[in-house]
Length: 374
Image 1 (cartoon, one colour):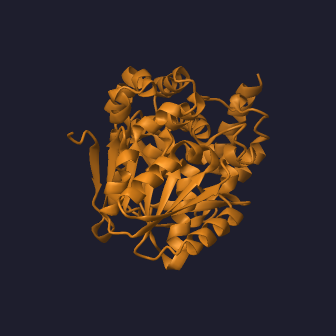
Image 2: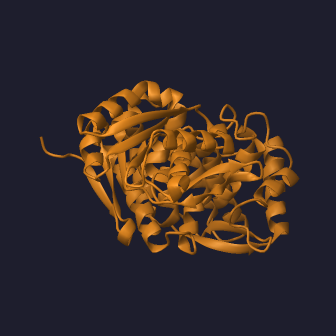
């Protein structure tokens, strides 16, 4: 049977790897992972995903001669913690995973970030493979080598750059994904069009329903998103330059996640990003950088896909303008105490805007807050 998967190479020299996108890749995981030369693999997963897919993945690995162990963590953003990192590191060591072996992250962004960070620090670095099981992780967090956990000071503030050896994005796994999680992941798909590909954003406007339904549009959306991210990562592996563009919408979104205490019952990452994308374009319009019509078009598309775009859509509230500003002050892109935003001159025309005056941010957030409460 011919291989129907799409391969996206990430040419990073000694750290080069492939991203494979297609349906049924979990069943091929043993063959593909064994080809990397490992003798053993520790599968890190969460309780929800593990019940669905860990057994099949483990069977595929064992069929191809790999010794396996399964490490299960609790689901949810709160798992990206020091305590969970200790749990995973100790379990990987107990499984006698050596530097030439593998940690396999089977789950969404939380599991991928946590397992990848554990792989980066156990034995000062072992190899790992990403098997992302959510749309968000397939198009974003599984690609690029960012790993880490959260601190009480903010999201993803403790971590390391550690590139995977392989990414297997099995789009069939998304068939069991709750609609809310599909929507949240879709926000990151839209982001790639908004950054520098207006044609892809227009494609999303025309094809988003097929992405959700699981047709060929889904594979294309995941593949195109991975191509876009891979291209940026190759240019700027450690976020010294234009990789920061991938944070479009995230300064606002991460602040909202911090205010809601990473409570996924109130707000998941992709929902925060959706509000952040809409705010980034409204802020750009308010500063006279971007046509108001473009900001309205972005908001309309996100809303059509069922995503939140306004502060008053945060369950349980979002605090005050000062709360938002304080949360933004912990953003990783802060330099010398000044806020850096990713803004836009139009759809597909984003840019890095360092040193945005706090007075302008406060005025915008006050306007947003007033609109939310009116």
